[in-house]
Image (cartoon, rainbow over all chains, first blue to last red; front, side):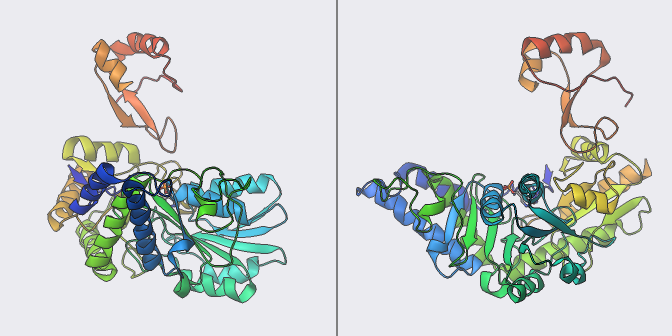
Length: 378
Length: 58
Ligand SMILES: Cc1ncc(COP(=O)(O)O)c(C=O)c1O
């Protein structure tokens, strides 16, 4: 099989990730629950993941990182924790449902929402930010990279806008962590939500948030923390505040190995590699008239994703043919980003998404081009 | 469904839902029409939730 669904989850991970998980399963107790070796080993192991994540995201210290089971959980915590019924929140049409649905829930309680639109290539109209600002505006929530088009948002600009107007900036780094520099200071973000199983090459069930010092919101869950056991309330200290219950210590050990792989390889190299694959792919498709590519694929503000359609053919059908006849894994249909499909006019047809990773090869790309060419000719 | 079908020896496979049935995402079980009755019986018997059963040309 040729795997081109890396934006959903990376299938091929560096060897060191599974090894780290396996080792952890043989050696880790419950972090912070005892003072014997296996428990302390878990404390150390998790602390090291925190350090790795803090370094990757430019946090002021490891305690600013709280782990969750994925980006969805992190986004729910940050969005629902930071915006209330009297607030106005600015978001974008690029968003994934893990941003939109929590926001719609808030909207039902009274929160006012505005959506920053995009142009025909799916690029955000950032110049309209200023117009959307109101006296009640509390936060901007947006994705760093569209999971449908692969377009990169100018998060630095949004961060500067938020800082200027005293707004909170919540960034969804699900598609950018591990590919682009995601630095809390540089982007002036207040909360960065990330997931472990995509470009960070970690196991599924890992993710978290990076919270700026001074930004506080109530936990979604409360329970055991291994500290202050006689207090009726969840400890207010980060990260215990946001981490009730036993963490996925085994998975997090794998995430650490994944982050280390990314750091060792270098974000620049990973980015350049993905871009090279995208360009090769798009160049190969250029002369196939029936193919319509969405997104700003030739720009440098773009990652390893290419969404396309073949004539008027159902994206589900095309993706299925690619899988069954050519052994090529892609994702069809809607991509949990309903407003993005509306903006691109692909609500009915959906789109076939090809998403590449560090581990894809030129030969695989060429195989993908050949398959699409054959389908177009039929 | 995959497991239940295999147990009963009903052929078929999971495919992405075609756009004319439902825009969006999700899966459908794709099999030949002659299995329809038996499939519905199986779905009911195993209490497998489903939205619709349709016949179409491929
Ligand atoms: C932009 C974006 N945000 C959020 C998510 C949610 O990630 P997870 O499913 O790991 O919570 C995804 C993943 O599909 C995504 O692409």
